[in-house]
Image (cartoon, rainbow, N blue to C red; front, side, top):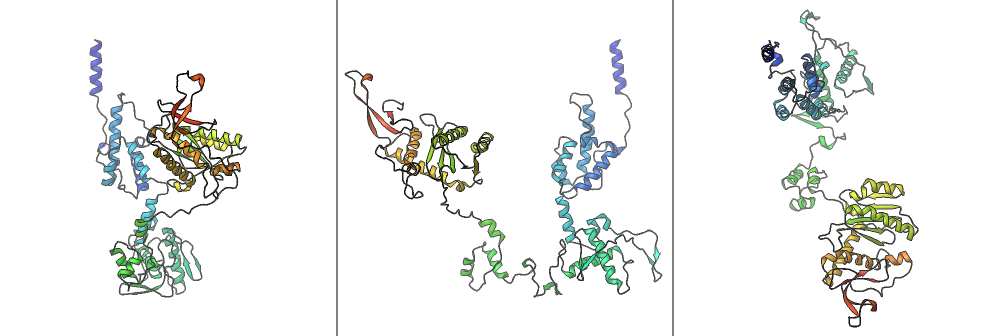
Length: 541
């Protein structure tokens, strides 16, 4: 019995009479307004669409005040039907090319937002461009498209003029004040205000002769206004006087005593300009070789700038700071072609600008740059009793990270970075890397050292560079500038050479050899000794 009642209730709800709607309310091919959306008229189009949707109680679908129900809700299908109806109205109110672009929107609100994002910019540059274009092509019977108030208005009741014939007077609403300075008229740039002032200007000019312009039609006034701009040679946008001259055989000839911009004149070097374009914009020397009779042109060719532009050369900088660690240059090298035997892929260098001394830290990851700089900063403060004033580097994220920036600002260190794509501005660190790699290759190639020992090779190269004289330092070495005394080079050995290390007696018995064969791998920074690699193993001592 319960099932029968349930079935009956469902049947009643299914066969209930559906509310009747006017055909316009359910027609998906309907256009909501007479304005079709294009790239210039978003503001009037959106206003018309909002009014039309509001009159149909559908505005909530585009402004999202009517929220979409859950997909599993029984109300979702009804909401989807109405939303797609609204979306079809919007597409039918657009230019066909635009409707094809926005037809893939998922909902009417998404379509409305996409159109607003593309054409609803706040400065309304597209509309300004359209108005300027219409003003440039000003016509007597179409000036009202610039502003609705410029459209001529006529009363329905005909009146008689002073001759007795029927006339249709217009409603003249334009009586704005105009100013005159030295007999010349100053107009504003707004189209509506411009016509207002020009109307008053004509009245003041005709007042002395007893004529009046109150009976003139609006279109005649606009025609006089366009003629006035054309005859006086004023710029349509700024109203500034371009020049004066006369009209002859379809051409305007400027007076010779006026300083007319070159853009409004026909160049006397027209033949020179034509050959410059025909020959794919060659240089002046090439043209003068081909056509010696052509005079050189002073015109600036924009195509030459666009097609032949090159970067200006960088001036070599010989400037130096006046004391140690006033400026430190830094750069990161890597990743290396292969991981070193001790697991490193990168290194970072810090170069003192005054002494050109170099400190190198091996890194396994780029993120270790900050830890390396902290160690270097502590070394400067403790060992040299000095402070780093400026750190100069590129724009790598290892230098511009938040932690690095906070550390530098906390210790009062100014961070200078080079411009993007301009490593020349960090030239000291870049050239130091170049020098390091050249000497590392030389050290490893002369003794055929395997590439996996590149980390020890670059450390040895750094050690040697700090003890070599430099032209920038007046043939002094970086270590000599820092310590104020010449360095001792007697302890230097050939990188990768064979050497024999003595084995102490408590590490051998009476029948064992007293030395072991090794390979020289550099100099220790913490001990008075050498770094050696056993020829029979992969360990370094």
